[in-house]
Length: 421
Image (cartoon, rainbow, N blue to C red; front, side, top):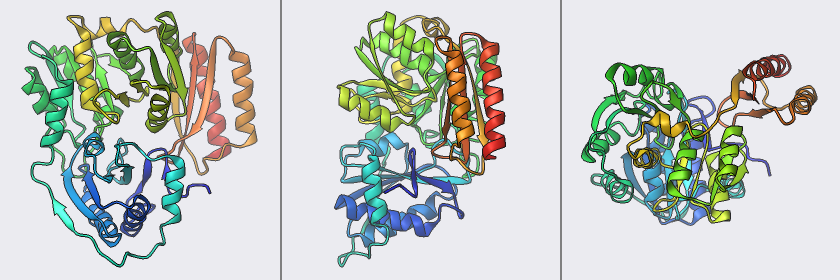
């Protein structure tokens, strides 16, 4: 059975249109029935729609017979670490404020498989349980998370000057404090969420302001989170963006791993560096849960996505932006971030997000992709994939030559717009 509501990362949509309180309540009840949960931990990000959707989810959990434990505003990895029967986050991650969504974690803190999501959708029309649950609130819900991160991932940051972009999201009251407790001189940016400014002109999806601040303030580096804290990108001392591929490359060499998991989007230069370093690479579909699946299957601990999902499973269960940022700081060892990131050669990549009416790739688009890949074999590639979270098709072109990548991306994006727009 094809999934109707679940996408790449939970259920997501524009609030009041494709995502409604009624649907969220049904999802809460269905997931409770599916998991047979007795205790469900619930967190959310800073979107204005969060409290209403949290209420709807809790109604579903309680009607399914479980106790809903409210964590309030928390980063997604904190919910994954909570370790109850079921974890739920009301968040649309990196998407704009008008979006929201629902993410689920099982009792191990793992994201659900496609099959599990199908099973939940099959239970959406299940009636309430005979026995109702109840609601509990937690005191200082972020405390356990902060303690865990500092104990397991903390490093001496004395002498570091760091600009931290909190995306007006769930890390706003957490990340700057953690960096300061570890000794860093911190400049916090976009740490005043008002419900409507999450991810707007800031965060991991828009690092321009952070890049300017790092250069103007002569910071050692900048860290950019997304709204729910499961993504992290960095900015070096020159104001240049350091993406997830480069961060995973730096960490792979620093941590001495023998296998890493990445996605189809990962730069060819990363693969070259890992091959030269004797590190095996496992490539997955796009989505951090597929990276997680590969790590569990291969007994690996490190993986990630170019977009900033960085996963390190020693002392953790999921991707975590703050943990990744601390690992990156520890990996610098007196080097500048630009020097550390330069270890990875990069092929030119061009990415276009084409807004479409239909995300179903037709024969013309598929034929063009096959033709371009045949022409570029050995010197580049193209990849076209529908987004799992937005009404867009993503077009990636990669080549040794920047002009070739740019031309391939432009021509393919124009065709996608013509055929599917």
